[in-house]
Length: 93
Image 1: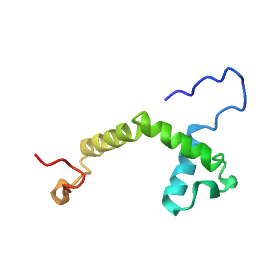
Image 2: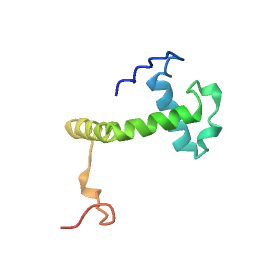
Image 3: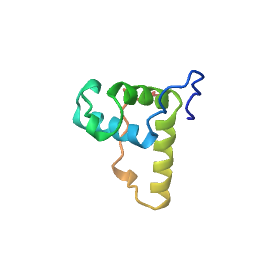
Image 4: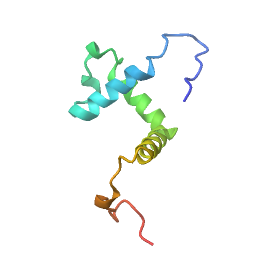
């Protein structure tokens, strides 16, 4: 989603790719957001957390998953024979 304009100015937003790097680092390593190393260039942990929150609210992750699955399906790289559905996350009918 586009960044909100800042009428009072301030620092420019951290680039999306840098925030994505920080988000993935935190999720992969399991560290606390506030312990995100500044050397990654991803901004502070709170910046990455806010971007994760905003992207989740905007449905970015759902669209990303759908796009990735569609591309993998088109390339015939998915094997659905081993897929399973867990009733705790999918509503039973």
